[in-house]
Length: 333
Image 1 (cartoon, rainbow, N blue to C red):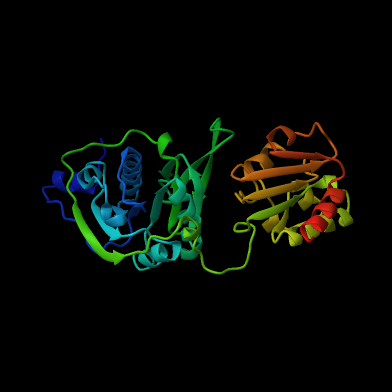
Image 2 (tube, rainbow, N blue to C red):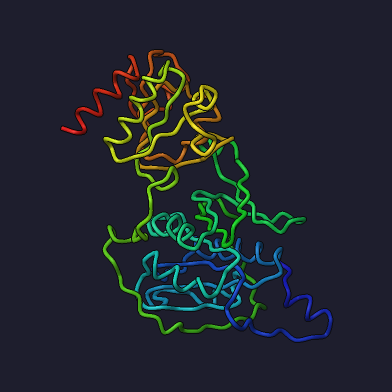
């Protein structure tokens, strides 16, 4: 059973006051308004985080809360349930949260959550864990720590979310069972907002911005198998032809081809683009954890027994620089 501010007030002889102002706190978002077992689990996790931070839990439900079990949401840990019409785009959701300055925003890891989470974090200048199995709060620095599954959840990596709001897209199936505490009090309100209900391809409605390692749909990663500067130039040529960015593993960093801001791996950036093309990359554990969220991994290297081979969706055994030049030429028509 959870213990929060209302319990402390009761023990001290005070009375529970409903949250006002709707600022700060932990916000759980159900874009389609559905409050099922998965969302109740997510609310419960929000309750645990909010208790550690000393704040409130808000549930924001789209589609006018259609299908929303508001009483169940309160029993699961929500202090306030707010409804809005339609389903939000990234910009609409960012506008809603900008004045409220939440400490954390939690979304389920479904189609809508995966579409909204990354853009929301970037638009608000917050931090992001796009795949979280659990959350905790650092008791000393009061920072939210996400536990990200790796290697098919054989291990979990801790990701400290430094910038506010901390946006986490949660795998609800991995969360504990939902709370069901009938003594909890809360309120239900209407934001009076009417969001549009965009087609699925518009769910990723994000502001125009330069393509970066974190936002590019295509990332070409260079490794020492490219051998020399001419090989790295081929990687850059391919990235340009595909409208992506070039990055590298730790061997590319050692060879001076990239800076630390372009390093992919546990000691660098963890990325999840639609396509990663690894050129001359052996694929050690650090690198594989860095690209675990990629939609498709293409590996080109001379060594058919390289560690990356079993994990790649497509393998090209041969000179990675020659492959990059040929691919770039074909891409340009």
